[in-house]
Image 1: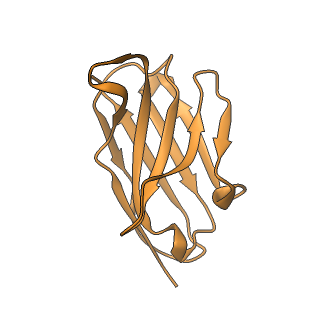
Image 2 (image 1 turned 90 degrees about the vertical axis):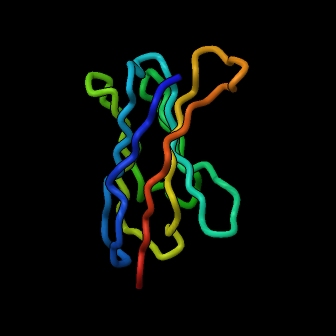
Length: 119
């Protein structure tokens, strides 16, 4: 099981930027990685993902504002968030897709980092 630690969240004014980081305890070279958000009272939702080869996917709400990237040498995935809106307020979680599913599941999750955007 890979441990994931997110950081970079905080309090930011609407229109501002943040960069979230997710550091893995082991190599992520061959793993797809993703970012998910969970607002209070809502289910966890997909935000962005990046494959091992660098292909990216975004939910419509963040296209053109958020950028996911990875640095395999640092076992790290980033989410650069620009033009932040109050509706982006949520806890943001990093997810690693395991190469093989096991009895404990197919994914590893971080503990989350809080992003709060005020107007």
